Length: 114
Image (cartoon, rainbow, N blue to C red; front, side, top):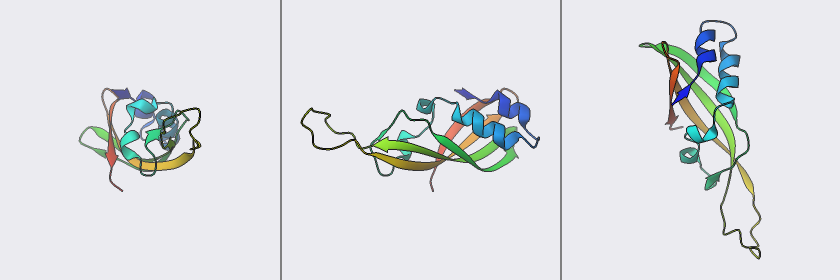
């Protein structure tokens, strides 16, 4: 389970969006639904990803934030020595929703359909 305590602490301040963006970008990519969000490749790379905050609001004890995630993927081949297919990274994008519990900062992440 992800936790975003700095974002919870910054809620209702002018710095909230910047704090949330930085905290999201520090999460382990494996805890986000990036693999499920791939559209033009087959495997998420290890490269860092970037977040863009789209919207924020409150709902029943939650801070709800919608964010666009920019990341890279590759089309995985056999990786044989004589494989002529070069490793070509593709830019990927998906939209996710972060539901931050206003008491514990525990955060669930959901992939949204575009």
